[in-house]
Length: 303
Image 1 (tube, rainbow, N blue to C red):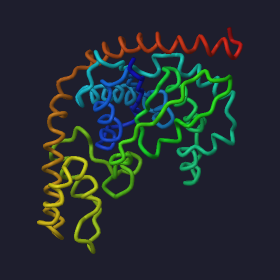
Image 2 (tube, rainbow, N blue to C red; image 1 turned 45 degrees about the vertical axis):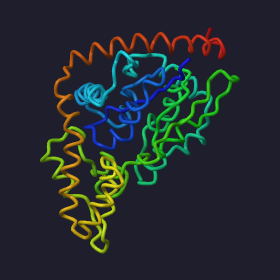
Image 3 (cartoon, rainbow, N blue to C red; image 1 turned 120 degrees about the vertical axis):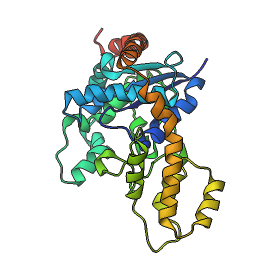
């Protein structure tokens, strides 16, 4: 029997190459080896997104992105988190088990507080809903970035009812660097759009922060190695040592060539295609997750 893999992506904004290399590509590279579940995490997106039209639009975009990246909906379950009511139900049960002091250790919560911002309750309990997402499907493997490892380390009461999942991290792309060297993130404004035109790619690449004292622009190189092999880059960066403009031009060419096939495939996928896939996926996800919830309800005394 195949092991089970689950991953998800928030529809919280326009997708960028960090989303692709950090979530889409690891899934597409591995999903056929597993019984795979691909979740559009729209409930998670509510912690930061307050625009209903944007949420609906972004949800369609996420599914189109996975399809354009190579995911076959006949070989995995693609579903929307909010279509499966067992997710918030199990999360509430976990909320009643986990302590406030434990949740205060959450990365997203601590980061927001450290910046002097007030976190909403959804962000505070974000790891709880994520644990429910994972454990509902007897998940064996969870593809995550290095900074997301904490979310799958969750101890639970009521005995060994849940399978302990393992993370699957591609070390080379655990954290995808942005144009300023920090983690690529919409909130940092340092992204390169995934389905950008060549002109948009060029504008983003030319804005990459460089260190004028070095022979190799590290931020340019860090992004370049995502789409080009090490041997080719070693030769290129040696040949154009110190010529930052030429190296950025080369990165534009390589990024555009890498992203163009996905961009063209994405444009051909209709909203109706996505809606059909999500409806079918929700039916399968509900069937699987409900089996686990029958056990949980009995264990806690709700049945």
